[in-house]
Image 1 (cartoon, rainbow, N blue to C red):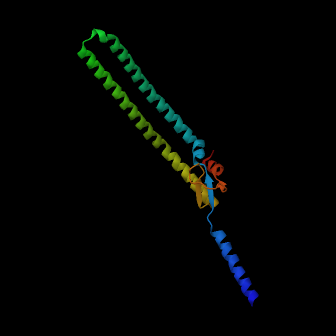
Image 2 (cartoon, rainbow, N blue to C red):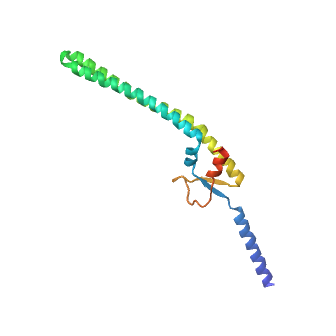
Length: 169
């Protein structure tokens, strides 16, 4: 009778342990930054942003050159001008310098707005593909493998190759 109890207890422990193992969630990891960098849409967006940045930089540089030219001109003409005229020109240069600073800030804000506008659909597409692949392979959790992304152990399956395939590249 004691042996039957021991066998019953052992059997219950085995069933409980098996249930516990089966109840554990499947976890995978993916380097989202690497995925986004590999997406053709991201490369196109980055090229568009680079072009926009170059346009803003050219405009700012042209304004700075114009400011330097005016400063040089006013400095050369200063001895022949009255104090009031020189003071007026100094205020004009300060206003121009301030407007260049404001233009730089506006350009920075426009750049960030355009960046968010371009990157949002790409991020959503990547997230949808990750969710699709994870569901198809039975993963309950997918952790970003990027440093600082909350990953403790990277022994799970890396979905990067499968997600790239799902995206067609």
